[in-house]
Length: 206
Image (tube, rainbow, N blue to C red):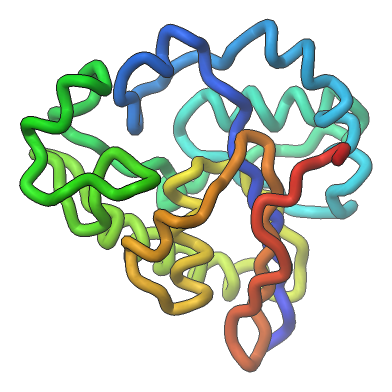
């Protein structure tokens, strides 16, 4: 099997009002002022990303809008394929709650760097452990389907942590120690020997 190179980017910052609550897989808008202020970062991504490449987004509009903004800053526009397996963690019935209302509902102590512990499963949602399993399955499939190619994926913080956790074989609570910044670039390689993490959270233009 040939080497497959994955370039995973977390979508742009969402609107300030959306950041006030747990939004998970809700389709919230991006922060318009930040899209303008971060133009140098988009230009840096447009110059950094490989050409040619297959481009994937998730079903949520914030990933598509981020890809389109990268195209607007210098990367030739590409068809965008939708990959549902790389969507954000579903928080189920807790989506839409203000952050302050979550703690009394938790069965496990919150994680130091995320509102939920790795095995906490919201009603009607999924745990981080389940995200890792879902994303891992998608990444293995994509590695076969796009063998030998470069694949750019605009995704989400939880899904990118899941991809790195799958590559490293680590558990959900360890995965949640990873910071994944908006527009941060994470690179993974799938080789005949297995997965390799090239970088996590490289920030364009810095």
